[in-house]
Image (cartoon, rainbow, N blue to C red; front, side, top):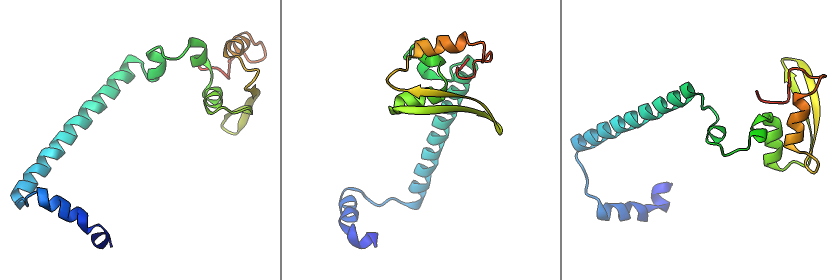
Length: 131
């Protein structure tokens, strides 16, 4: 199917590229696989290094997000990022509902929310904050 519809692509590449021998193709394949292994090893090592340094959230560690915004739970962060008008954020652990909180885009202030959660006697574990 593709050979019939895109025969001009094959002609285009055959015009500029010469055929290679099997040995040359295997040598290039081995070189590319070694290069891929090296790049993936360096990438994996850098991820382990970042985890060891405690920089799991790179946006926060680079200082690109305000401190109050970083303390919000992921649910509130996603609601703000997606532009949700109104939502009910429910915190669940296992099969138990630990708490609910209303989110309104118009009246939500992250600084005020963090202060309320930190000083709340009702919720001493500050369940709607990332600590």
